[in-house]
Image 1: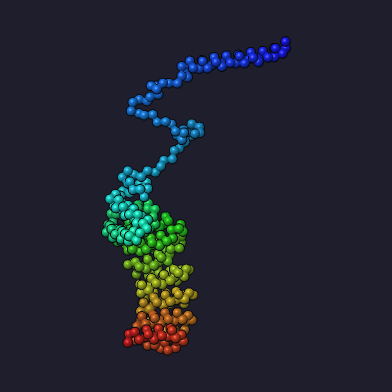
Image 2: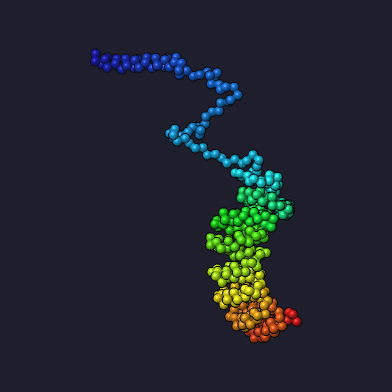
Length: 368
């Protein structure tokens, strides 16, 4: 009897659970609140199609902290240039000029990828054509060129922009600031060292009043010391370099870098002012690098003042380095007065180095 009861109870419980499950299923199917809507109920008003909700569009986190969606930077509709991602166009943006340059760059890319001899020839021809095109631009193109310079990914094409902006210098002072700002923004990256060299050459082409002041400021800035020698050179090429005489004299006698001292001495030779002779004599006596001694003597010779003959004779006779004696002799020949030439002949007779002596003799006979 007990065994029959143990079998009946589980069977009864199973039957009860089965009935309950069937009842719940039938109730849910008949509940209008859970009934799946038909096709008509899902339709949005006419003309506004329903866009499925993507998983990525569902915000996460509490309602008080909505997820911020990252907006992709869009190229302005007026732009449409694939190689430049321009967040904002400058006020004087020239779309026609930009289109021409974009076409040039795309063609140059195509020719560079070409593997035939014809492609190489077309590449060189197109580059020359681009240079000629840029040379004909006026100051109104500055903002467009500057924007492209700061957006162009190819280093070679940025060089074209740098040169073009440098050419605009005599026409607009704004070219100075375009190049100056580009330098300041990028000079700290060692990977831009080569490009900065091209930029500084472009600054040398500016030849305007603003660049005269900016070059001196850049030379003085200790943060730009890796490029100081190049800036000194370009200032020495400036049409207002004579006004920087004191600046160059001070640099020659106070600069710690021998490379920079050499550039200061070269600049003084270009100015060729007798006023700098005392500074050159003083710098020579304090100079310990023979190459710089040669440069200083060369600058003294370019000045061509006969009062320098005794100083040059002493160096031509007694300087320890043969190269320095040679430079002093050459400086005497540059002065070229009868006294200077006679002094050079006499020095040549006592020169122990036969090769140096032969140069001295040749120079002493140049004006006879």
